[in-house]
Length: 277
Image 1 (tube, rainbow, N blue to C red):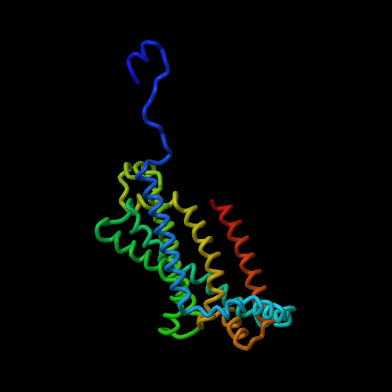
Image 2: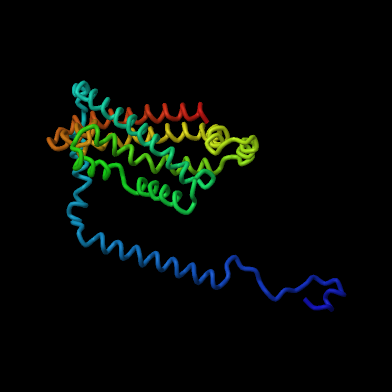
């Protein structure tokens, strides 16, 4: 903009034109898209190496055939599913309780405002949380079935070990988000560290704790239904045996029972969390 234009009152003239992205940003965006396309092509080639496309093209016909064999479901098979369903609920409930009990101290050790040592203890607690969250409950069940044998105990421990990471992560984040003013008020009374945690932090995170626990129980109901596929007890064992014997009408009945159980548990969990939070 020139001084002459300013004195005359003319609108200013700018030599630069605003753009949404700079040339460097546009170049980086194109490079990113090209890298994404190259990655997709490479992954597609890797997938096609061991894929038999004759089975893939035949998959719709096979799905229609199996679906026709599932109908109508064998409702007379329901009485035999009551005890396995009860075992599944016990696996989810006891596993959740065990996971929550183990996750609470881990969460307090992982939170910055409650850990006794940010350099030593906190990394160990975070490692436990990451390890638990990284390994699926089905893998835990495979390992535990090989260690302690098939049955409900392997499923319960697998659910507990998987729940530690989920509950511990959400709980330690809730602990770190507590109001520091309440903690300072309790500390000002001369309370010890344990009393500060008990009266200043626990009341703040208690609603989140119950909500997280119920949410995890709802998830564990779904996960415990498939642990029987690897011998960890529950209704999954009935599902596996029915598939092995090609009893597709029984498979349909089992799937209906699992669906109904999941829907009821989700509704119950939502109601409880709504009442607590």
